[in-house]
Amino acid sequence: MREFRITGSETQKSIVLCGDGALDGATGDFVFTDGNVLRLYKDWIADTFSGRPVYAMPAGEEYKTPQTLFALLERMAGAGLTRKSTLVCLGGGVVGDIGGLASALYMRGIGCVQIPTTLLAQVDSSVGGKTAVDFCGVKNLVGAFKQPDRVLADARFLKTLPPRELRCGLGEIVKHAALDGKLFDTLAANASRLTELGFLAELVPENIAIKAEVVQKDAKESGLRQCLNLGHTTGHAFELTDGALSHGEYVLIGIALEAELAKGRTKCDVGYLEELQSLAMRALGGMPALPSAARAAELARLDKKNHTSAAVVVTAPVSKGEYALLEIPFADYCAELAAIQEKLC
Ligand code: NAD
Ligand code: GLY
Image (cartoon, rainbow, N blue to C red; front, side, top):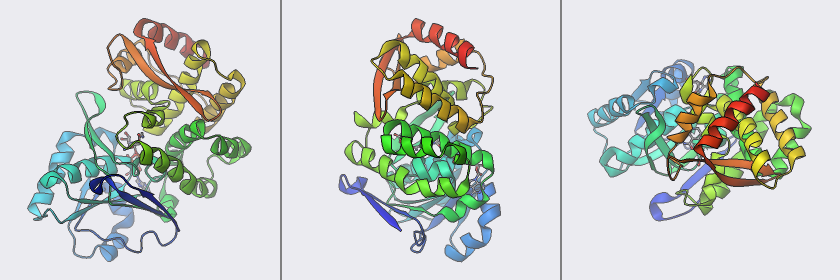
């Protein structure tokens, strides 16, 4: 078992346990999950959290809403949780983000244990304390930073994931690889194994280490943590446009498109960017047809990372292990995105 510690202020510290035995100390007062996870792990939940109330939201990003958040808070209040209580979030990134936010809001903050059950949640979303719901058509518009007390990541959950959900996790793994040369080399050397469960499960600790190191240095995203948005500005924009694919798949698309944006405007290693693009496309299983770039660009204009509506901020890969923050005038972003889409899709 591996252990990572994210230390900050007293209220912002977190322990991440990963591997066999991580679940040994799983405890909590209320279990929040979704319908799929409840169906698959009903017996394990009953054995592990015997007698604790369980609330399962309907599965899916479309339910990552204030309504679901308040439905959960209502049940937490109904169960009589106190300031000393701990909420367990058992599920993927949607459950983790909503449950994390509920734990930040209920009585101004109670305990939170994240038990991530998707690859994406294990390598990324359960670690680092970003919590949110989508609102007014903008992803993660309403949220809070709230470090979970514990993250317990066990590969046993990954065995029931549909192959497509593995690809979603791969989106964030390729993002980490764009920030970390060693992980990039591992993926490049194993490009034919990108959808193999055993290979992906082995990558979980390394990905947690990459993310934990960034969060340890900049928990509230005042600087360095912006690197974790790589691929996300454009990815989120397309995700909001049609939502036909999953978050991780849009991240892969975002990485491929933003690598192309970088080529024209920063000192970059074009050969490396092309390798990264082909890794992202391989992980995607080919570039899908995408909806209108103009609509996506309009949505990217609303991204909360932008400083003004006149320019879109993109965290773009530039060379192995390096990224750059690009502030692209909106008209240029719009025109280039359309041209890139024409070229890659
Ligand atoms: P998800 O939570 O919707 O899970 C995907 C699907 O897998 C769901 O249908 C779920 O029911 C099912 N599932 C979960 N565990 C399973 C298991 N073990 N076996 C079988 N099925 C299982 O989506 P996700 O991809 O895990 O997370 C995406 C969300 O994470 C997005 O909302 C995104 O914004 C968020 N996110 C947050 C952060 C962060 O730092 N907080 C980082 C990345 C992504
Ligand atoms: N997933 C981006 C972050 O945690 O900062």
